[in-house]
Length: 461
Image (tube, rainbow, N blue to C red; front, side):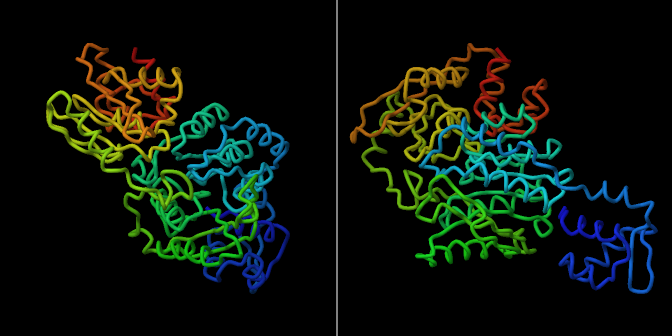
């Protein structure tokens, strides 16, 4: 997986005789690692005392095997154009855009350190478009992006012509099984709170196929005026069983984040054996701003009481659920559901409606929710959930800051093929729809980027 020592060793051995001790110093690999590397060359390695070299006729094959870092070409210009059109950052998700130069530097660094022709690389969040830079540099790389922002996932799909696998999730509720244990290296630029660093790193460990052999590459920055903040975030990483293999100061630069000097360090973390057993449960307060921030207030009881009353309008019993759409819930026939979505950053509403099967669902959302912002957004939501629910929007709440979405079950007169998928949103799409494209067949409906859900809706009629 780690290409730098192999590439350096092949380069040295291809040039002639090398002393074993010099190989250890040059590659910075432990003695045992160099011994294992030399043993892997088998009969293609020649020995003379303590000196070794590659047989001249074997050199071309090993140079091809090691693979030189790709030439960036016009990569910077390509990323400048891509970043210029990326959907604007969402402050509530702690989005601050990395500079094009930083995105290119990340891609080149990853390509130098790891053999991206063979390494499975997963990005845990990618508003900066680092995955797109890696794809441009190494089109053959196997890349996956997991993100909560449907806009970014759609943008990456379009820019990469779906060569990058995109999966939706909110890490606070867990990681889709289809991406767990599927990566060799994970890259992430998490929220710079101890809670955010710990959660994103924990999910990154879950992504790794073999955590002790894998690597987490993270961005993290803090002001030198507040070293205690840096200590808290680093302690959160250490508590997960991560060792700091390297910290490169001010590697990342941003168009903003001036409180930390518009810069962040690059952390290379190696999971220890006990990192397998560590993890994070559900956790909502990880950001520095907005309703999902660490200091966010609880929803007033009066609002929740009003929500339950609206759910019970038809005389049904009411079940109160949290926002976690990732797990199926058994709701008895004739039961209404009330869900508090006041902390919804945008994507929760549609997925809760897909994930809950009930006669009525009442959902409390912010007045400024993106699905309610204008007639077009409301129509898109209505069309998306139409196979299951008929929607009504109520703007008046006791505090005049929230809205209530009432979803009443449709009688079942819609297309049977659509209903089979829409009422089983926690099942694998490929099991429910045999014609599903291969890249989404192992995902659940709720794991798909929203534009892919809309495509399935259109394809099924």
